[in-house]
Length: 328
Image (cartoon, rainbow, N blue to C red; front, side, top):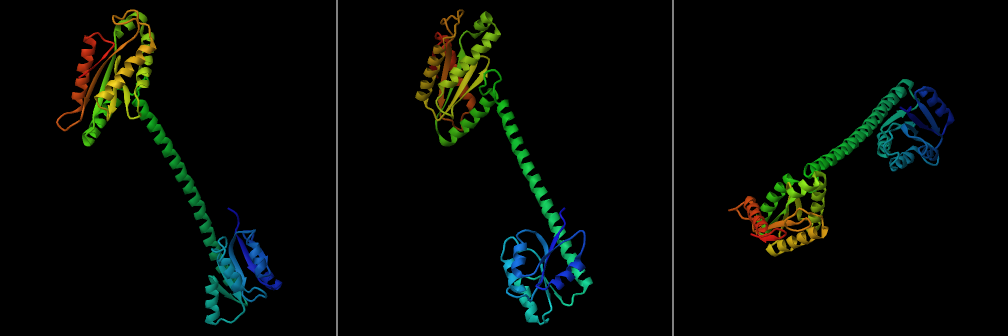
């Protein structure tokens, strides 16, 4: 830690010399000033632990100098001890304290009194410096902990997102679908707004896998997943991998007509992918069948009924030739 500096201010060089001799120490930097103006200038170059300030000086006396020091943000907290040969009347003492002095020393100075007072203020200065160091260390540690907390939150969010995604298609997985459907059901029940569910199934996918292999089959799933994802229109809508070759779309605040519009977009998008499927009994390319169900959530039902309704519509679409959608 940097050794402390003390500013001694007196217009008489012999007084400054006396103070220097008493205060001389390898652990202390003593700086001289022979006027109030010079004292103020010295504060620009040093950070003082203590100022010993003569009261009776020409041009600018000790009271004026102390008042200016106290008015400066940089120097207002430096302890000032007045050194004076003036009388000890209470009025003069109170004026000194009113100017910002923390103590008085009267000439002729007693060396032991001076050194003991200086020692006390230097100890206070050292404690203040140590406190500032500890405060900076604590602030740095708090900042470090805040950064670690932010990194941890980011990592947790990434883990949460990863745990909510299907590893193959990068769509939300079944777990995320289940949680979202329950949440949207509750929201629809509170607001009394319609909720639409679409379940999509790739037609004759087992035959596709058997004919082209699982690697090509996985690639087909990815392409279909991207196509279905492009078919939904709003950020609040989600398309998830429901299981195997099935996908499901949750469309909050969407009535039956809105659900039909999305189902038509899904059929069109998958057809335009034109993924060859020579072993399909429906078409020479990959197609999907869709089941659409809409309801206004209520206390007398739950989300399972909506899933069952979409499943029934999907079964009807398959039974009537596939590559189509049906509404329950």
